[in-house]
Length: 275
Ligand code: NAD
Image (cartoon, rainbow, N blue to C red; front, side, top):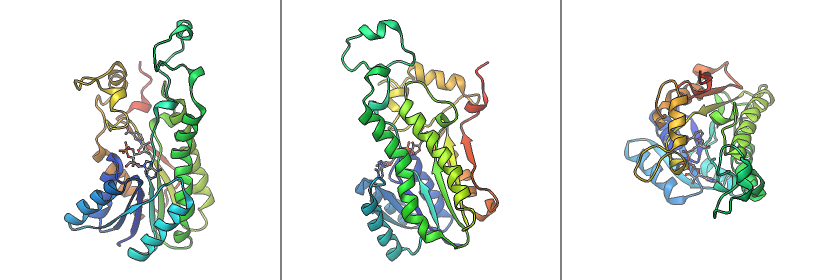
């Protein structure tokens, strides 16, 4: 059955792939993104392949912007059945330069060098807001359409670092842990009104957000990039298509009795102790 699906952050690398896969199932897609051109481009690509999609500009951190987006979706596609909360990411201001603090770090005067003590609360706040509030607000706006309807669900995008924090990125790790926790909370809260809530926890995918952390200018892996491969039993980074089948399953009635789960898609990263 064709459903109305809103995908936030769908102008980006991972969620554009998910939006396209959901469109191939015959669903009508609202490609929602802060970047107008990115949203329009993905919607055009879906339409060019025979799918039904519209690009919608909205900021997941602003209620008024989301209300306007909902009105546009309702008018052009109908009431929302499925919400994929894909907008999210990290920020350099919430990132330390080194994985571990060393005594000598306190005397390091290199420009841009950042210890835990230098982290800017504004950077931490940005990352927490984008990932957590940016999941909560769209849910407040779009899930109202789903109450009491059949076959509705929400899919959040958490991360591997929600299970065990990654070095250097305390804000992003904490924010995604909050997204996983919220997924469970919401699954329970919405359980009597027919809305299932689940999440993906992607491992490592080479995208614009992490390219400079994981690769050098010549394309070779940084030390951190290599460390990730060494810690991933399947020995590779993920590709966006790796997320598709689990997304389709969690958004489909095939998973009608599944709610509150966070599924790792990580090539075994989270299962491996490193020894
Ligand atoms: P991306 O940067 O390619 O896409 C994110 C999209 O969100 C962009 O198009 C951006 O314009 C949009 N966006 C940013 N702020 C917004 C806002 N305030 N309102 C609306 N849209 C906004 O990133 P990606 O790698 O495709 O990541 C998608 C999701 O997957 C994110 O939640 C990310 O945290 C998560 N994730 C990514 C990885 C990875 O390895 N890339 C791993 C785990 C989880």
